[in-house]
Length: 299
Image (cartoon, helix red, strand yellow):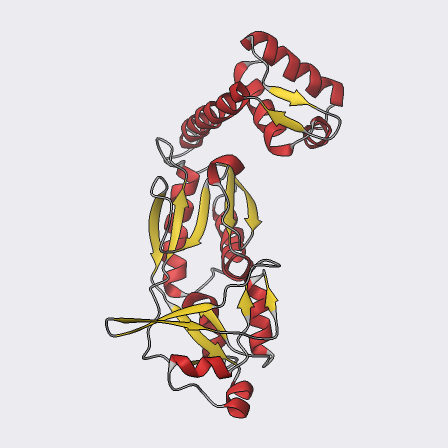
C-alpha cells in the first residue's frame, strides 16, 4: 500500500472509529483494513491505535500522525484539484453548521454548489453544539459570532444580530413588550441541552447593557424546533436575524424591542488553524458569501 493510501486509510479509521465501518465504506474485507493498519504501524515503528472490544482510541503518536496526515492529504487534494482546470475545486468538503441555518440555507447552497462543481463531494454535520474542527477533521464551520477561539481563521459572511420575535397570534393575545424587563411576564422559549438552562438574554440601550432573566414552559437543543414553536404561537424566542429573515418576510414571525439592540451576531466561515485553506473550502466560502448576502439559493 502506497503512503498516501495508507494515510487515507488511517484517517478513515480514526474518523470512523471502527475497522468494520471502514471496510464497509471501502468495500473491502475487514481483514484487509486490519492488515493495512498493522502494516502502517510496522512501517512507522510505533503503535497508532489502541484496540479494545468496544472502541478504538489513538495513541499520542496516532494523534500526531492523524494531524499530519490530514494536513498532507489536504495539500495533495489541493494540488490535484488544480490540475484538471484552472482552480477547479475537487475532493471531499466536510462542513459543520447549526441545525436551523444548516437545514434551510447551507444544505440547499451546498447542493447547488455541487452542481456547479461536480468534482466536489460534501459531508454536512449539523449540531447546535460547538464542534472541534481539528478533532472532527472539518474543512469549514459556519458559525455565529463573536468567536471564542482566536486560533481559528474566520471570514465574515453576513452581518446580523439577535432579535426578539414571536408569532403575530402570540403578540395579539399577550401584547408586545415595550422594554426588555417586560419579557419576564412572557413565555420565553429557550435553547439549550437537557439540564442546562440559558435564561439570560442580553440587550443594549445606547451604551447601557441590560441582562434579563427569562423563563418559559419549554426548552430544546435544536434551533429549528425552537423557531417552529415560535411560529406555532407557543411563545417568544431570541433568534439570529438570518435565521428568521424568511419568516419575517412571510409574516410568520414579528419582531419586538427593536430599539434595544442585542450584541451583533455575525455569520462566519471558520477554518481550522492550519497552514492554508483548501481550495474547495475557499471557493465554497466565496459562494456562501455571495448567495447569503442576496438571500437566494440558485435554481
